[in-house]
Amino acid sequence: GAGVSQSPRYKVAKRGQDVALRCDPISGHVSLFWYQQALGQGPEFLTYFQNEAQLDKSGLPSDRFFAERPEGSVSTLKIQRTQQEDSAVYLCASSFWREFGPLTDTQYFGPGTRLTVL
Amino acid sequence: KNEVEQSPQNLTAQEGEFITINCSYSVGISALHWLQQHPGGGIVSLFMLSSGKKKHGRLIATINIQEKHSSLHITASHPRDSAVYICAVRLNTDKLIFGTGTRLQVFP
Image (cartoon, rainbow over all chains, first blue to last red; front, top):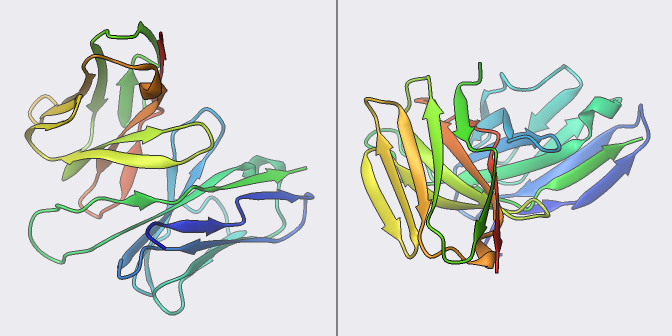
C-alpha cells in the first residue's frame, strides 16, 4: 500500500487480557515509531526502531508493554494484562533515515488502533 | 510544564478569516513538525522545518530558533480546515515530543 497501515483499527479488551497491535510501515522506511494518544491529548512517544533494532524504548509506560520488529519491516506492539488506563489510540509512524546530514524527511502516520479496555 | 506548548487550545473562526496557531518549546530541537489530525485519528504531516518559513497552498509555517517559537498560519480559512493542529518537536535522537494540539473549527 501507499501509506502506513495498522490493524486492527479498533480493539476492545477485557481488563487483564493481552493484546497485539500491528503496524505495516511504508515499504523501504527504516525508522518506525509507536505513540500513545489518550483522549483529548497529543500523542506521546513510546518506542523507536531503526530496522530491527529497538533504539529507544524510554516511553513504554510499564513492563507490560513490549514492541518488536524482528525483520525490520512489520512491527507489533504487545500489551500484557491490559488495564483501563491503557485505553488510548496507538499510532505508528515510519520515516526514512539518514545517519548524517540535515534532517529532511518526515514521519508518516498510520490511522491508529483505538484500544478500549473494559 | 510541558516541553511543547500550543496556543490557543481551541479556536473558532468564520470562513475566510486568517488564522494563527502558536507553538513554543523549551528543549533543543533539530526540527519542528506541524501535523493535522482529523476526527478518527488520521495524522497528516503538514510541514517539517528547522529554520525560516515554508508555504504550501494556504498554509504558512514559520520558526524562530532563537526564540524557540513557531507559528502556523491559515489564510482564507475554510470549513474543511476544521481539525486538530499539532506541533511536534524533533530531538536529536529523532524522537518527537508533541504539543496537546489546537482544535480549530471554521464555520461557513
